[in-house]
Length: 281
Image 1 (cartoon, helix red, strand yellow):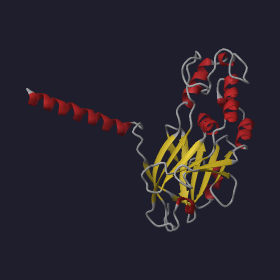
Image 2 (cartoon, one colour):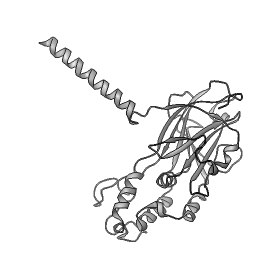
Image 3 (cartoon, helix red, strand yellow):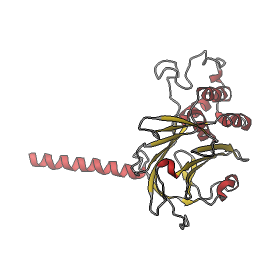
Image 4 (cartoon, helix red, strand yellow):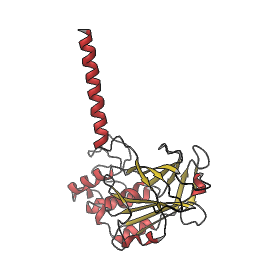
């Protein structure tokens, strides 16, 4: 009898393990990094608004096109956000690129750009409050937000818990740029000097890991109780400070849909083989 129970327990645990492994194969919850090879940077990708998805890979969960390239001196992270809710996540709640030169997918060095700013959150929240959806915000309003993205925060570059700040448009260090294409897509590029991440000489077969993640909207109880105090889109009948009360009632279904999407962060994990100069990419 004891032998039967032992065999049954072993069978149950094996079945459970099988379910977990199968789940990892079909869902992204296990968050295994995707292995890719960086393309050699030929500069022609600069006209990205005219070739929206050429050379890009697509993350279905985050609704985001991405492309990783390099040359002898720099690593380039390029994003193409056509989905306007994804644009809102990056602009409202910030975006961080984590680099691990040991390729273990650890948060070794972080580059925050854009940074999350309360005033930007309030601006976009007010747009959602009036229209029920950030996607109705005009291109002029988004351009105004993008023009304020002048700062980069570096994490762990000067020590394990260090934070330093850079002007995003500098020419001699890590730099970032965000702009809107003619078709409304948000175009993002981060230029990272190899020396800044400890790669003095580019060698064939160099592998590193990159983890890209956005912030997210913290959901609160719609009745005003529970949840995190001061959480995004919170507030009762009177609305948030600086916002007209009752704005939530205009399009509650669209508001709820917008909140739900914004509460799911972009989360992309990659293991990347850098291209040598003679690689095609």
